[in-house]
Image 1: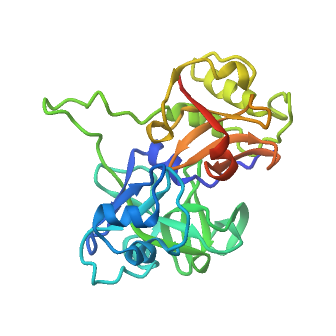
Image 2: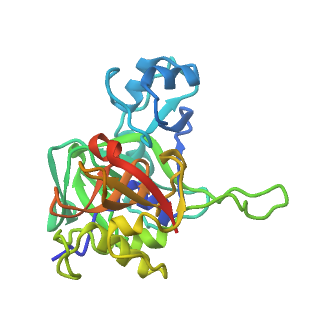
Length: 313
């Protein structure tokens, strides 16, 4: 049975709440989305900053590989000033439990990363029931602070609690901002948040056991998950990944992909045999035979090398 309270991935909270990544006033940053072929040297050169400054700010080593869609914080000013302590943004900006309903321009939370191998999120600071167990490296949205515990935004809008020592808070804010406007004052027709309603539909099946040829609500495979999520949003798709790949508009590259686009992968025989839904920031949701359930993975390694088509409906 799926848990009622799920940890909300950063990519999803950005879409559902209309948030953007903003900077602390003390240091000027820009968030750069890694493009295919980028490395730390080329990214640093683009912005005229030292590689070690980029590494220091993002907590990575100079030899760390980059993946397309990965977000990097780039320092744009005050290069001689050290970044603030990673725990200071949330401690200085949040108390108690923050609401997950932003106003334009308001800070909703802070970007954090789990530093423990396995961390437990509970319903109350230090006590209560276990809501979720999260692995090292997962990004979280820090929205509150009580004593030695951070409040985290969960997918149902509730707040879960985790020990401060288990999370590294980044010096970047998650803030609500209005969409771009045209010179005439109306909404820019080229601006799109993708298909958040599809992602919301798909997330309802997070944790559902994987089974080839599965039948919801008890089990699901990759193409059934995609078919079901889109059907709930009024889009009819065939049952198998190989049939679905021919439906919709072709997106030429991952750099042009939007949240809610469909991703298709090939197997060793060169045939399309897997699909998932793009979340943005190099992450996708899929029914994974490897994980044995519906889960989120990074578009890296074998997934990236096997990606052959992106479709938009």
